[in-house]
Length: 74
Image 1 (cartoon, rainbow, N blue to C red):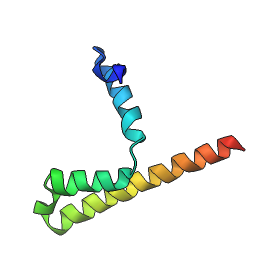
Image 2 (cartoon, helix red, strand yellow):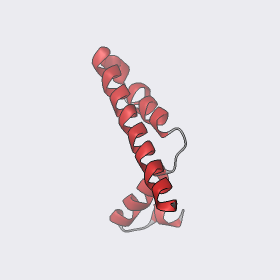
Image 3 (cartoon, one colour):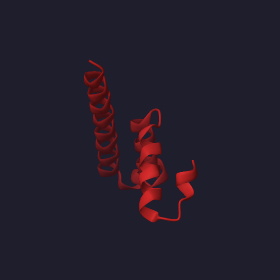
Image 4 (tube, helix red, strand yellow):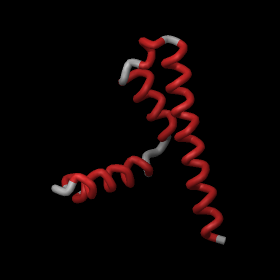
């Protein structure tokens, strides 16, 4: 938590990324952030498609991370 308030912007950003990567339901959070919070619903089908594709991308990242961790344990 200390690193989130670090005076160096690069270090602060690195710590934020580490924290966000550990969020549960990250794909759902990404979808809601893009579609609801950032107004993707105002763009109609295009906004929905974009939010869904970004959520799918986050899901693929979660799966890849899980796969890499599983293969490292072997």
